[in-house]
Image 1 (cartoon, rainbow, N blue to C red):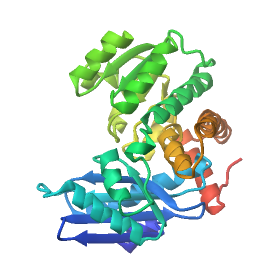
Image 2: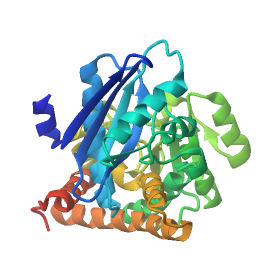
Image 3: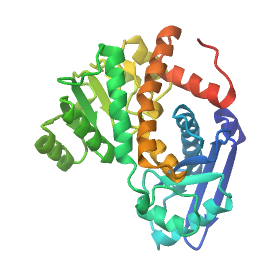
Length: 344
């Protein structure tokens, strides 16, 4: 366990269980130099306790980097609740988790993530104020989508020489809350949309409302396009997939798009521009963090506009240092967090 913490530079790891509700939860705090750790709570089945620990640690590190490059006064953290096959009372389980969060005295602020909802956050909020994305707080997804849209424009400018998306072919994998909102922005900008999702109803809606062209799920990643936007599950960019990509840039909302860090170098080697996921998809974090701090919508919207600026900075460093943007983003985040950076 301590080897894993050292490898990810994890600051602290907190475990709790509550037999009465079936709660088995992990909170990983990666770095609190910039402020209290903020990160979502996942509620998923895990094959083992070790797998849950690794997921929490890896995601907490990603949240630190995301908050640092987003210019937020937040550290990075993540919570996972191990989902059992049978839960007697979901509300009571999340209330118990709320008590766990509160016991850390504000060191960690929780939020919606895979498997959780605003209703779950409402249950947590009965026992702690260290929670965001409740029902009253609003859905962060539109803000994530808006940030990704501006990031796609910055990527088009960097790779294709113009941020005009009129007629640009964009392939979107995944039409969830973020993916569909992104598709709406792109359609309004005149982009040609290619879309896929495991839910055929969402694909049909995009066809009817946005004039999108449906592509089978298994074929979308290798379909010819200008911009590929992964907006579903993580780990979709494997070495094998990258060898068959037919796009100029990858810029999407999904977390942890690279199956392994080395895939970033393979993208660079093929001349495919990669928008580091935790830079381009930081709009949701910006929204929940600033809202939790009491900021108003105009301030939040202005902060979202900096996503494109940060991406442009990452691309400039990448070109100067002859490294992939993913490597550069890590280095820039580490300079903020630890004062380390050896490039230009």
